[in-house]
Image 1 (tube, one colour):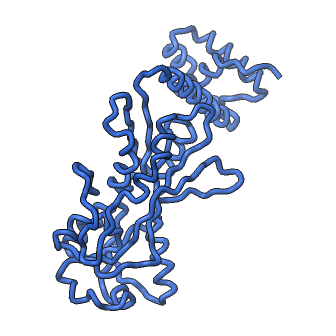
Image 2: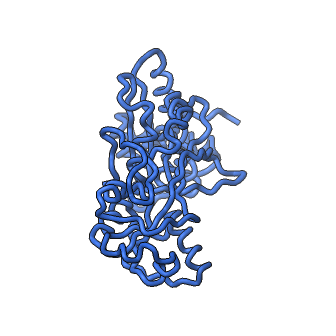
Image 3: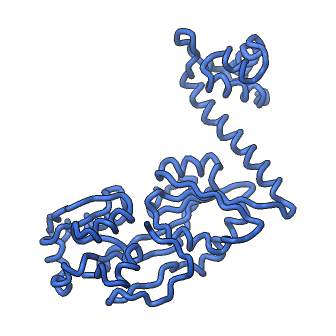
Length: 319
């Protein structure tokens, strides 16, 4: 089989983006006939038509969509190799991190602590959905994804999952609800208005399983996919929040919110997701090796709401 011509592959990507031979030729500053000839050569090499005509435009065939996915990966890998090798020799290094949009900011700061403030390091942070972040990891545009939604792992999965930290989950409400502080958890869950994470979260999955086992139909006051919004709803006394105490540590310390009960069977787990790479980012190895320093990046909350450890100066809050 003949070797794949990367120049032809680059022209193919241009046609796929522009939708016409004319547009691709203009973008690449070459003749339309040259683009057409080389696309035909690529199709001959692959043994499939890559485009179908739709009016004046060219649209990808099924083979073309497959080829484009692989082409994107090939050129992303080439860019990643170039960036990695250029970083050798004392030049400024870059760590590209994707974090679930709803993930605790305190956890993210804890993860970055080993490299924050270094003159030779640039940190690039991206937030988004789990799907978009894992796609970025697959395309090598991210070095690591931080998440509390553990990806499925099986024999065909490319992901390497490292558990970093775990935190408890509690029932938290305003002092006006403090009269229920000594009530049984079952009574709180069945009689109080509740503020819950949305169904796709790991905490909600565990909560739904728990109330199903207890035979409780919860009274849902609100659902939110963002912990900061749950914190604000709890402060506004919209109900009792099912939330990790670290998210409301300032309110617990000041007394504006109280921890009514600890849900011992629920926890929130934080993971770092990576993929095997021929040229791994050495900065990532540094923060993962240092994980013992932040395996519990959050000061535990005592029963009276006071932090058992001083807050680090300048520590980010989940606002």
